[in-house]
Image 1: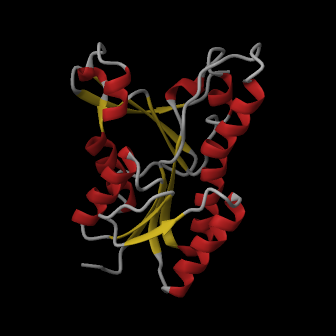
Image 2 (image 1 turned 45 degrees about the vertical axis):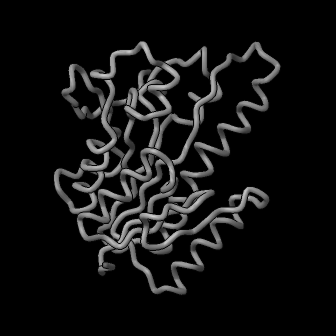
Length: 220
């Protein structure tokens, strides 16, 4: 059932994005997913084309929202990617291009969508990474595109996803943050509960199944 409360999740068909969509839907929000494939759980889907630039894809989303007279209480960007490597490697240039597209362009697109469709008093949340608070010599392309997210930024250390479990089967999963915990935090912010001031960065750390949210500042 659709309501007058709306949330757009950029990256809404991914593992974290799907959890966020489901969480907001259960809380009575009309859900909009933006991704390269549809999320069948969302009320509405904007499927991006890999063959056109972010600018054109984003214009399609903005127009679609206007055509539906949609107004949003929250725009949440959980799209992104990770890539290892250091500046000595020849692949650094391709890596930076790829991480810029995944991590910066998705945030810019989300902010642009919010500027056109967000209700007064709404919230924009962009996803960074706790690792970007300090030097990232072994993953420089990833680090430089994750620094200084604006409006509100979440900086998880490690999310408990099927992909992460498959790639790191020997890790201690009790120290990974469950996706519903993150989704619950975002839902609370959308509804004005304990929402930090604009520009705040929140580190998300889990230890022995207990998750802490900490206001942080980038290291000098």
